[in-house]
Length: 147
Image 1 (cartoon, helix red, strand yellow):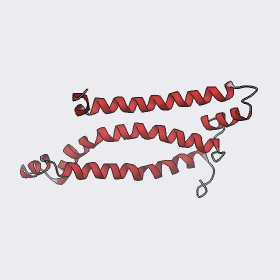
Image 2 (cartoon, rainbow, N blue to C red; image 1 turned 90 degrees about the vertical axis):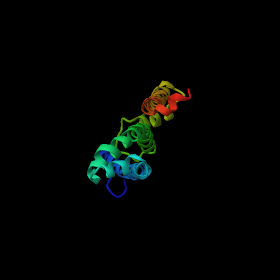
Image 3 (cartoon, rainbow, N blue to C red; image 1 turned 180 degrees about the vertical axis):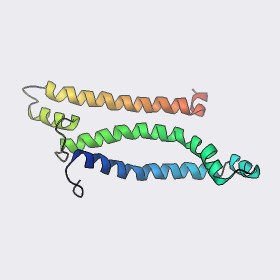
Image 4 (tube, rainbow, N blue to C red; image 1 turned 135 degrees about the vertical axis):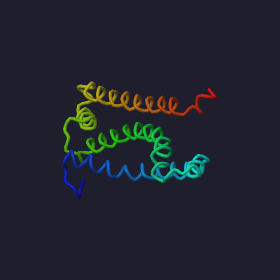
């Protein structure tokens, strides 16, 4: 934020740029694992090109992990944005973090100004994590076999 300025769009762009590094590592590890699977040499033996192997075999096998990872990271982004707003480092004045900060100052007189945004944020973040767990169970059939 100190490089790009204190604007909401700059905040989202900077968080997105930083998060892409973690996602790139995840995709790379998934591709390296799948590259050593049996279906890649089989596809090469049948005459498939590298582009065909990537688009028809490797990308579909990594999309499930990316969907789950993106769902988990969404709650991390929201928590990061709320923390920056709580610390007054963000330009947004109506985020959960700024609402909690305003509620802290008047917690003795008006406790609902603190409790409503704090509980709402906690319920939303827990819901996003539950959604990620549900998607993990749907997309990973091995996890359902032992339950």
